Amino acid sequence: MAKEKNNGFGKFLAGAALGVGLGVLFAPKSGAETRKELKQKIDEMVKKIKEIDIDEVRESFLNKIEEIKQELSDLDKEKVVSIAKERAEAIKVKLDELVKEAKEKATPVIQKTVEDLRTKTIAVLKDTVKKLEEPKEKNSEKASSKKKNKEEK
Image 1 (tube, rainbow, N blue to C red):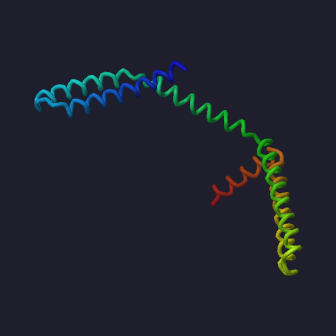
Image 2: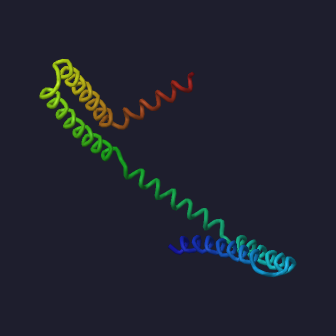
Image 3: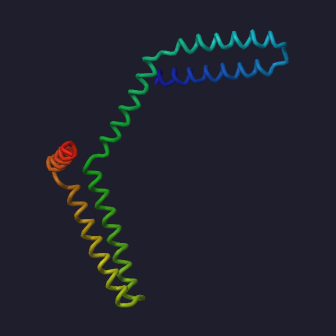
């Protein structure tokens, strides 16, 4: 928490220095005075920039990366499978509605096409869920063989 405040403070200092520099440029003073003040402000800004702790910035980046990794690991396989099953069920419901509407309002040719679409889509959905439910070892074996095939090419 303290480190985040320090990073914010560094940004604040840089913004403040920029604001002061612009203020000096637009101040009603002679050119020599303005250049002298501007040089002083630039020197102050360089000094403040040199005071920024690079290790602190690095650690802040690493902390953010670690948070992202944690979020990604939370999106584990079970959640993906669960979401896929929910979406598949929602698609099936919509397909059933489409078939029902086709039976009520469409020609036999369109009805047949819609029913074929429903059958094929459900088969694809089941296959997708089945692949997601495969054990990790099988998935890692597939990935290894794909990588090996690419390397051989």
